[in-house]
Picture 1 (cartoon, rainbow, N blue to C red):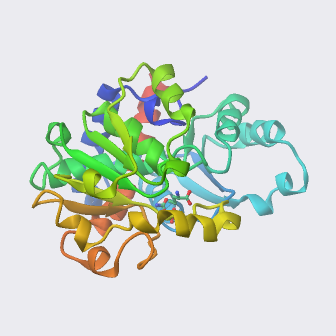
Picture 2 (picture 1 turned 90 degrees about the vertical axis):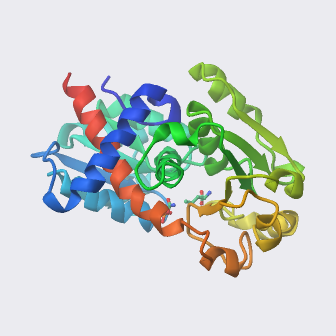
Length: 315
Ligand code: CP
Ligand code: NVA
């Protein structure tokens, strides 16, 4: 089977560091049209859930690498009328050169990789969002590296994720952060604390855990270098909206929490944001917020993931 990127730990820390070096190169050389590593290739960008950043950045990214991006909404496929995942994946394997997929279960991306015989990139599942967490660690490596990406500069930094600590972003930040020595603190209500599956992901990958959980937001924010949050109601959890907002409201990232953090602390958010819920409007729009650098970096990092897989699978 070709190499895929289904989980944060599908690349070793050394390979992931290579992704970041390539992302920095792609970022610098973007205007020059750096590479045509996907020339002649058609990539399916398959969405079972909504997306703005992921959809746009992958479509632009595949095009900029010389490939042909095909955005495919699952509602337009026969899969929405009962065709199976294995059959759909085997069909895709006969036409395409790779698949980027956003869906519900992690088992679905695993099955697409298994049955298509193609490289597959996880563009968000209920379990993980590795394209975002790689982008976030890269963005931190630029900020703490003084403008130029320096992956060593993230080591020992304290990143606190507030809110739903049993969601895809919390898990992916714990995994990717741990790969690079970031001290990840997951902070949220007890009933939304990480499930045993997170520790299983660490165990399966043989990556030492570098995260902890607390339900105390003030304790968590103390001396933090990054205050990070995500929506309280992830896609697919809309039925639980009222209960989630009630449970998570003590975990809003606001100026009170920022005062406890380190003096050069930054605010990060994978977006989309809901000002007044998980983050106050002043923090979201304030001068410590690096959310749009983060969003831009999706493009560079994902191009580097695709470029890295292309090289690996050619070898
Ligand atoms: N952060 C992120 O993945 O955004 P989209 O849902 O808009 O793709
Ligand atoms: N946890 C969020 C991330 C959105 C990018 C969700 O799954 O909806």
